[in-house]
Image 1: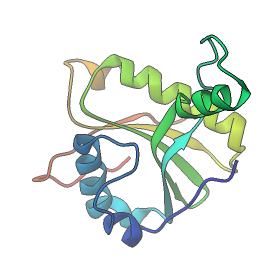
Image 2: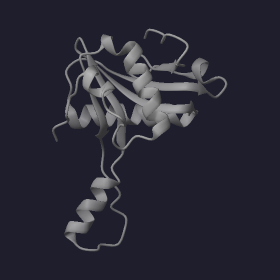
Image 3: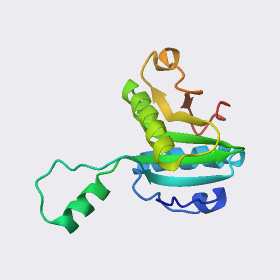
Image 4: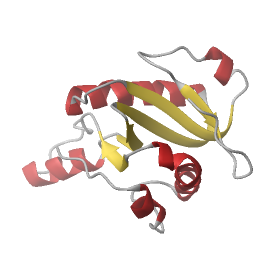
Amino acid sequence: MRVERVSRAYLLGLPSLPGISPDETELILDFVEHAGRLYHDFSINVPVGPGDTSTPSLGAAIDRMWEAITRPRIDLVMRSYGATYIVEAKRHARFSAVTQVCKYVERFRREHQPTGRVYPIVLCRSHVRGLGDALISHNGALVVQRFTERSAPVSA
């Protein structure tokens, strides 16, 4: 499956991000505005892994549509200098966000076979206590980005 790649300027010109909640859209666009120059291109709402196939069959066409719309989706994929960054945006991150983004990294590697390293990032405005201290690297650096409109993002 081909994933559309867009520029920082294109992304910042969008009024909303397809398939992304308004809170997460605001968070992603704030991050891209402040730190997006570090990345070559971006992909939004990237499907990875299989969709739900556990429902009773309603015909082949409807079953295919249901599986397509229930596929897990990565909020943002960013690329820079041979590395790929898989971003899960959460207004308030919990430990489940770490599990989610690490699963996305494995699925992305399997489906898209990128060259270079693939890094998971949890992008958030706040997170549960202890999340930053409890993170263990998963085949690379895992970054919890506590990003607010008033502060510059922390470098990975």
